[in-house]
Amino acid sequence: IIGVGHMGGAIAKALLKKGKSIWVGARHKPNLQKVTWVKDNGEIAKHVDILIIAVKPFDIEKVLTEIASHLHKNHIIISVAAGVRLKQLSKWSNGHKKIVRVMPNMPAQVLQSVSLWQATKSLSSKEKNEVKKLITSFGSAFEVVNEDQIDIGTTASGCGPAYVAAFLECLEHGALNAGFSKDQARTLALETVKGSIAYMEETGIGFDALKNAVQTKGGITEAVFKVLKKKKWQETLEEGFKAGIKRAQHMAKGK
Image 1 (cartoon, rainbow, N blue to C red):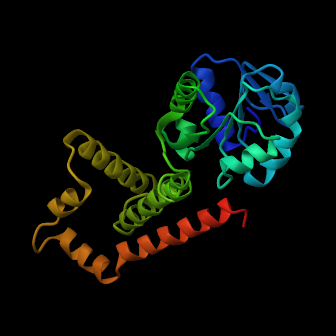
Image 2 (cartoon, helix red, strand yellow; image 1 turned 30 degrees about the horizontal axis):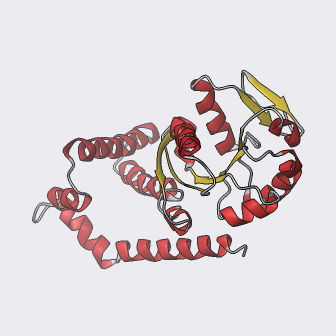
Image 3 (cartoon, rainbow, N blue to C red; image 1 turned 45 degrees about the horizontal axis):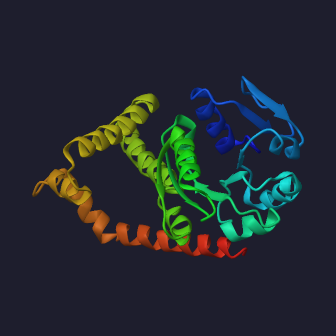
């Protein structure tokens, strides 16, 4: 693994839990047990078959250029850099063929990620299965058929934790205004969302169906939703999605 920030560190911890042997390339010694740490990224390529590049998008060209001369044809490069396409990754790695692009999200740190991924056609079925096994070690994963789905889907899965946090923040504020303590308000918000998710997973009820089921005529929830609908909150959120998708597409073009 090259780069052990939030995402690289999360992936490293997940693989260590699976008993994998890991080499880590980083400027400073990582706070990880049972890994081999080196400062020279090229050195890692001499000892592993799968290279996970977990650096910021603006750093990945430099990293791939550094390791390009150390790659052999069977090396598999896995990139988690947002907005950087397979074609560009291949170019920066001196035309390397076996490349995977994956976009996890923040819950990878607690092994609950949702990842979108795509591999180049040069990977064999066995290699793809190996990659999928690796990715699912820190959560669930969806292989996409079109690379655009990674850029667009990131607006839902990658950005999603921020949307959830914003909603939880609203629930917390509501509880605080009702006189609950900060700890109580946080717990109330988290447990409400956790319970709702568990209920939907177990029953299979649709999101819209549950939303309507909780709203009884003349009740509190209905009163809340009357205000939300008047403010066009769902339309506003969807406009936000569109802005995110547009930005993702610009990033994919190097803008």
